[in-house]
Length: 290
View: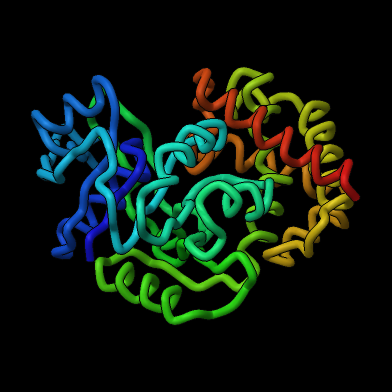
């Protein structure tokens, strides 16, 4: 397959490496200093805090070619508009692997609804300069699939083919028939969580402030109560029923855990803030439209 991975951050770099090492014709799109680093050193990978850095020579490009079998987009939510403009004349199916709560319509209107698939990346890690430091595999991450789905929920041959190719490359992909609802549910929970962590100054600081956690829980419940789609996974519905007296201690333990530290919650960069703001705007639009 001829593939373009659009976005050379943690998730895009890891996906490109897996597909490249599986023998696919993969290009990784980047800009500026990131593009220069990729052309000089390839994708540089390190597991956790290991001093060992592995270099993988994935071809890096600044602009897309005219046609691909599949384009995977892994950028921040607030960067999608620029991506849509650059892909309008590029042929090939487009899989958006990112946080997105605005539904498929604005994406399909820009590039053609027949080209569109939705999903969410299952990787995690941080950028240490030009080195991608990814989380060491754990039982949880091995069991957590990368959900991918058609906007209308169908199980199509192209969806089955993408899932099959990803699995062959060692990527734990899974068909998700309610992908749009999954993305909206994810945003309904993660936006208040991310904003509360940033306001507190980090996961551990939020863990030390039970009142702020209770306020965050109220915002999550408001989001879930006004969802325009079913809750997916349905287990998130438990957040509306579990009493604060039980939920607050659970969240405090999570916020103090290594999982929270390595999940990206500690990232208070301008890009992270802008993404949360864009997702919050998308959630408010759906609530207003109800």
